[in-house]
Image (cartoon, rainbow, N blue to C red; front, side, top):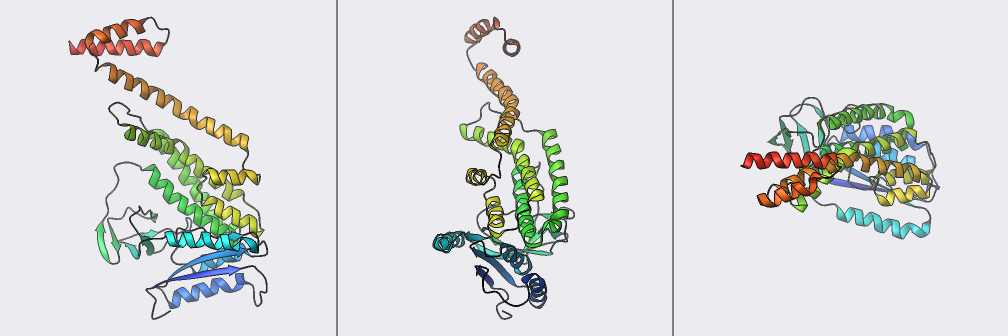
Length: 356
């Protein structure tokens, strides 16, 4: 390892939990990890865990990741087979995940500040990132960095003109992934600081999002642009609610058997997509009625903004019509009982007056 310290090493743990001997992993792994990182400070090591049947020890696998891994990969925390008969399918799934990884491993460092691996704890001076043509999100503590070094080459950092909800959610979802691994590896108390800090951050971001809002501007916007605006608005309305739901799940989770822990870890990586929701509902982890209420609340929150945007769009389109057509349209709408239409007529008349 000393001669290949800069190489990227991959450790695969495959265990059915049987035929173990010696001291418990909880007593050995933390010391082993500390010694390994001390002796090889530049070690690049990723850990992939495969559990077989309920006899396997998911918590031990996560403890191995926690103590030894220095390069987290965008893979499931664990690949779990309920029975030996499912091993082929599980290993194929793991191979597909490994084959999908692309890019080169680079070392990223800041001019000041530290990278946060798990909120509530001291950060790291450097971070190992599998760089590819996709967007990368890193969470830092301290003042906003002015420069960022990638493999020793400095690059200037530029602040975004406004809060990017998508980037923030991606950064916090990585924190939730790390917190779930820590929760299974070391128990509830080990994630208390992370739960507290994440809850405070989400509250601040919800308040900021509500204050700034997201305005739909449909006039002169192409279908693609309209879809992008709708997605941004949906993220602002529902994205932070999803994070809060994950926070509540992380805080309340109490199962200790390996199969349930594996489902907790892998279900979270679906980012609450349809497959994860169906699977959780099948195990009684999601109340369908509560989920229905959440969806209705999301639609109701979008409705006022969408209605005002559509009216503004209609008014923009009407102002492009010939003047005689506008007069006829104004006359046709004048008898409506809808107060909003009456105001639209007044605005149309005012714009026509300006044109004259």
